Image (cartoon, rainbow, N blue to C red; front, top):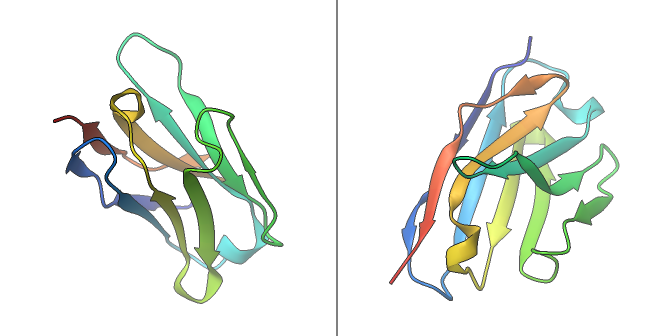
Length: 111
């Protein structure tokens, strides 16, 4: 099973930016899509961005134009660049690859 470790979360003011990273163990990273999801207490986990093995991307409407997903296969790492952050973006963010989830990283957007 792939091990995934997210980092880069934190507290940021509205309008600010953060970049999340997701590092995967093993040697299968480049063959699979990676997706980023977020969850707030009491709500379902929702997908916010996805990048396939060829670099094709898709986004939830709520983050389109503000978030950018990317990957560096040489580093077994996926990124989520988040700009123009809003309080509604506050959540625990998780990455997902081939049936494996990371432990999550907290993002809090507040003045």
